[in-house]
Structures are given as C-alpha cells and as structure tokens.
Image (cartoon, rainbow, N blue to C red):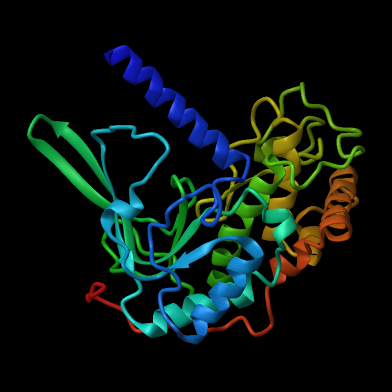
Amino acid sequence: MKTLYTLLGLLISLTLASCYEEDTLTPTEGGVELRFNVPQGSNSWDTYFAEIYDEYSVYFIYKDLQREDFNRGWIDSGSPLSDGVQGGGCPNDEMTKFYEEFLRKHIFAYINSAVTKKVLPIYWYLSYNAYTINKIEFMPGWVFTSNVPANEITDGLDFWSTCMFGVDTPDEPYVTPTNQSIFGQRRKMIIGHILSQAVKKKNIAIPQDFSNGLDYKTELINSTGEKDNANYYLTRAFPGSIRLGKFLLDKTKNNSAPPNEEDTFIGYILQSMYFTEAEGLVEFPAAKYPLLTEKFALVRKHLKDKYQIDLNAIAEGPQDWDIPLPPYGETEEE
C-alpha cells in the first residue's frame, strides 16, 4: 500500500510538472486555485498590473507575502546550510508605485509576450527585505549565520521575486537603484534572465548561420599574456560570460572547453546588453576581433528584426530612467 501511494504521488507530481511546461497550468485554466486575492487594491498600479496580466499572464503580488510564499520550490534540497528565504511585501504605497514605474520604464518597454511565453511565472513578487539565510557550521554547536539579499529569485515553484530594498547587513547590501548605472544593472538582471530562458524555451531561435566559423571543440585560452594566441577566447569569437545574479562580467571562465552553441548565443545576447553598440566597438575592436564583431552585428539584427527586441536600447536604457526612491528602513510590512 505504501508503494502504491508513493507511485501515485510521483504520477501526480509528474503530471503537474508536465502541465506547467506545456503552459496549461495557469491561474485561469485547469482549475488552478489562486494563492492570493487579486487585484490587491484599486490604485493606479493595480490597473497597470491588470493590463500586464492581460498580455503576459503574470500576477504581480506586492502585499500579504509570508515566509512560506518565498520557499516554494520544485525540489526541497533539505540543505542544513540554509534556512530558506525570509521576505515580505511592500510596506508602503510609495514602494509599490516605484516598482510599477520601474516595470513600466525599464522592463516591459523592451520585451513582448511572444518572447516571454512559458518563461514568466504565475506570480511575480514585488518584495521588501527578502534575503536568504545561510548557515556555516565550523564545528558541532558552532554555527555562523549570514543574511544575503535575495535581489532576484527566478527558480520558485510558481513565482519570481524582485527585491530592491531592505535593511542592509554587514554581509552584503541590496542592489538598490540609486543612480543610472544601478538602474541599468537592475534592468539587465531581469531582462537578461528573461531572454536567456526565451532562448532555452525556443521562443528565440538561433540563426542558421550563427555557428559559421565557430570551433566548439578546441579549448579556449583566457590569460592577459595570451591575447595574441590564436585560441584566445575573443579571437575565437566567444564573447565571454555574464553572471546573471547581478549582471556582472565573469572573467573566471573562458579558459576551458568552449560553451555549446546555445550558451554561446546567449552570451552574445547578454554582452550586447552589458555594452552598448558603441561601447562594444571600443571593448572589442573590429580590426582585432573581426569574427566577434560580425557575430555581435548578426545577433543584434536577428533579435531586432525577428523578435522586436532591441538589445542596444536595453543596454542604453530609457532617457527618463530616474524614479524617486520610496521611504524604507527598519519597519517591516504591517
């Protein structure tokens, strides 16, 4: 009997996972019961969130968030080194309004629903003071705990979370958008993940001629003293890596077997968001890296012409990029 229940539970789990992958597990189809009452208010931002739901089928949740809402994963790792995620919703209207303006100016102005199909979750939390609780046990009975800001969560069971504000700890501050550069960083942290997943979900196809001239077998070299080597990664037209968590250059890779075609294509997309086209020509001179320059142009044109995704515009950001910061501090959501 125990075996029967185990098999039944596994069958149900696989069925639910399959439904989600096929995009039938939505808030309004398949009998799925919502975890939140939506809309959460009758303010201007609720009207905007409703418009976004109509086009993208994602609910923005900005209040009534509890700890258990942040700890819904596909798999419970049971790791003794983590106490999960703690977080809450926006403690005031000014913060919710900030998030609405950020989403309007910095995110949905640059993407479209054709690209985000099967990428966006059912729920997207607009959070305050969300952080992971990490534990290190030096010896039995001696446990060190640190809180690390959960700026973006993109692997929840049915949710993502964006958190731009919180109570900083000595361990690490939040990536709070206080100037144009950090606004751009937060924009790219979100859109970078969306476009990466869009490629993996086949919403964005790789051009047939993308891999012409690329060698995916010979090992790459990444060393300051080896820039003239024929196998230097930029010379071989591999653009390098971006750490999506904070959208920063990752120079620790590119010194081994090359990434596969899909990861290389995603690398071009992310680098085209990190550097504007003008900055890219300075960072990667065409005379020195002709094949790399050719591939950058190919990827930018492909996404713009076929998917209406302007990577250079994402890199530059909106002219009216600034948004007044909301009040926040020690007070948690009431």
